[in-house]
Image (cartoon, rainbow, N blue to C red):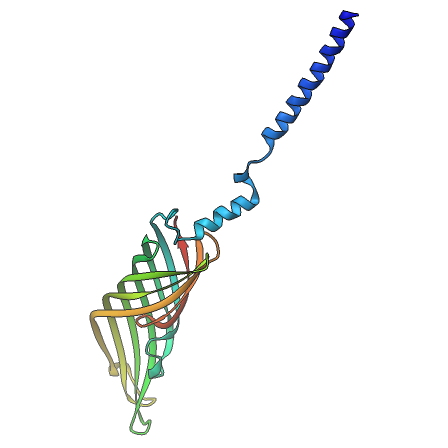
Length: 219
């Protein structure tokens, strides 16, 4: 009787032990909180927040922009090559950044004299290299408003053909190169589509009265 009871108890213990092992293996394979889709989304959103003092690390941002209108649109110019700018910014702190931007544009205008019987056709090419300093303010978790100023060099080449309308020749072509120091100002906004990719828009002086573009964050 004792041997039968001992055998029965042994079987019960083995069953309980197997059940505990099975439950333990299920708990070990259950994904932890960090791998849940909700936690991963929260981590991605946190990386978008460049204004978090706790998680902030300096980072670089590369941006490209295209101008929607010339700075000299009041002079009734027409675009030959749209204003384009490429730059890189270094975010020093959550609210401050410095950067370097190069840009180029080409536009044309017709200047009429003597009741439109004498015309000067002008083509102007602008190239600028600017150091830009920006201040940043958050708008929600994904957005920001920024503004600042730039300073640097501008090289301008003006090609003019002067003469009676319809009778200009290559000999009438005059090239006037100009260069010098330039200062600009701007204000804009940026919206983060992903932790790294964003879209932005600006209004200001220099390259164009209004620009739109994309930016890529390296960190």
